[in-house]
Image (tube, rainbow, N blue to C red; front, side, top):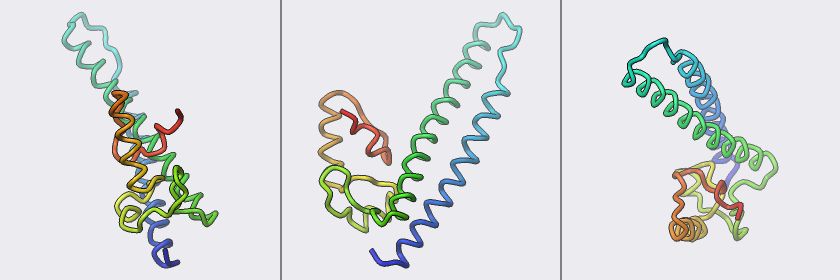
Length: 134
């Protein structure tokens, strides 16, 4: 990948990193605002609990993607960006433009997803590498 393209992707990753940090902070504030009130209404308690769990799950997903983005920025800085962690071959530029934090080429990603599907575990798009600790 040429230097100009790498700079563009690094800037995009940096912007996404900043956006995720803002989102994580908003989620934290929102979770803190959902306080368990002194209510005996089971419906209200269930709704508050559900909302808090949903916010926490979204925040966990944001943290995972943030970690992948930070790793991609470090890989750019080390000159290792775009190498598949599984087979070592180059990840296609088209894939990196679509998912700049991708850590696997499409062939390895499909194989990993097939393996995870067989085990009954699905991995959200963009969370490549998280499931590779087998």
